[in-house]
Length: 308
Image (tube, rainbow, N blue to C red):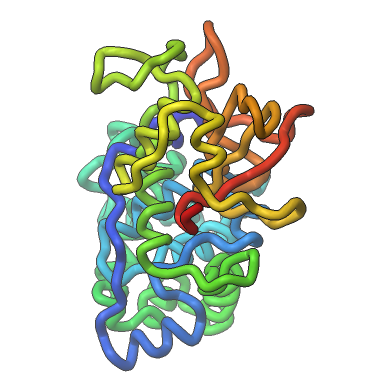
């Protein structure tokens, strides 16, 4: 999974727009608008690294929602968690490609993928799946149903994938508030930037490799949101007071900031990525990494996309 995370920020995430009229209507009905942020179900079920990988790979095909890629990943191997990833027909790997089919869509090698590419590599496989869907109707949202059908020739399979995609899409935020296209674009860019920093050494007061430095926790948060066009203060306590503070018990969404310590002095902050995980720069001697956010001194979360 570290390999997946290392590739996660290598390409710029785009705001995907379904532009074909009738096809866009079908996609919207299933919650497949590519501006959909991850739902609570997505955060609970999709490994954080796969979530960002699906977003990145989908961004290479305008009109393809990341939720469709995620639905296929769920149906084929439960995001690589299935013990048996060799089918009776000879399909292999997390996206269940026949080797000959994979070879048609394996190039160019995506950032962080295996070289030569292999259907067993999650990065290679997800990008190849995006290319295959794009070539079979997903581009510009022309024929999402047909694209999925071409992946596995079964109407029941199409229904299964669309069902998962609908679960993973969130046109309404977990708190009940509508989530706009701009919010989704921000979250995608924030996660992409943060994932690209995995492995960067911790440095107190550090503002990142662009400044010849490592990152501390608030420096990473500030830089990730700056990459998405949102200006945040520099230190964790000020970042806490700058965002919309979520009421206790509010389900977290990817991109939310999680704080540790107390409101008067937040000694640490991380970016929630889903599935109970955050990406953060923890302390001296460590690196930017993904870890559980359930620390004993966690006290609150904020949603910078919602304003103060």
